[in-house]
Image (tube, rainbow, N blue to C red; front, side, top):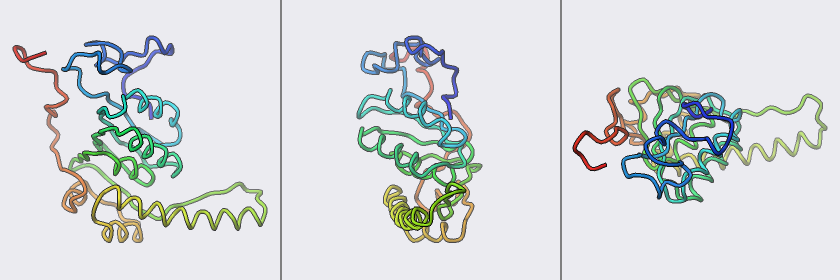
Length: 212
C-alpha cells in the first residue's frame, strides 16, 4: 500500500508532488496554507506495506490532518489495530476516502477516520475474522491461539462499532452474514458521507487571486 506518488529512496529527498509547493511534509507548520493535508494511499494488502504506511502516518504532526485513500481487501488484524492506535493516540484528524474496496481488516482504520467519504462505487466486505496458523503447531499452542483468537474477534467487533460511533446491531448483522455493503448502504446507515466523482474542493489548489 505505497503512497500513490513515486518516492525517492533517500529519506532526505522524500518530497511528494504536493510538497513541491512548499517544504517537507514532515514539518507542516512551516508550509504555506494552500499545501493541503498530507495524502496517504492504503492500497492492496494492509500487511504488505505496513512499514511504509506507518512511516507516512508518522509524518503527520500530532493533531494534524491527512487524507487516506482506501482500496484494500484487508490484512492482519494486528496491523489494522496498529493503524487505529497511531491515528487515535496522535490525535490525527484523518479523512478516509474509499476509492475502490475497503474490506475485512481495512474497515478498522477507515472507521477510525474523523471524516469518512464513500462513492456509489465503493465496496465493503464485513465478515467474521479468519485466522491461519503454522502447519506444524503443537496442541497446546493451537489451543491457546484458539482461545486468544476468540477473545480478539469479540473485542475487534465491538471496537468496530465504537469507531463508527453507531450502527452496532447493523454492523454485527453484516459480519454474521458475510455481507458485501455498497457505499450507498454505508451512507444510508449513517456511517459515512456519500460523495460524487467530482473534484473535492478542499483538495484543490486555490484559484488565481485567492489567498495563497
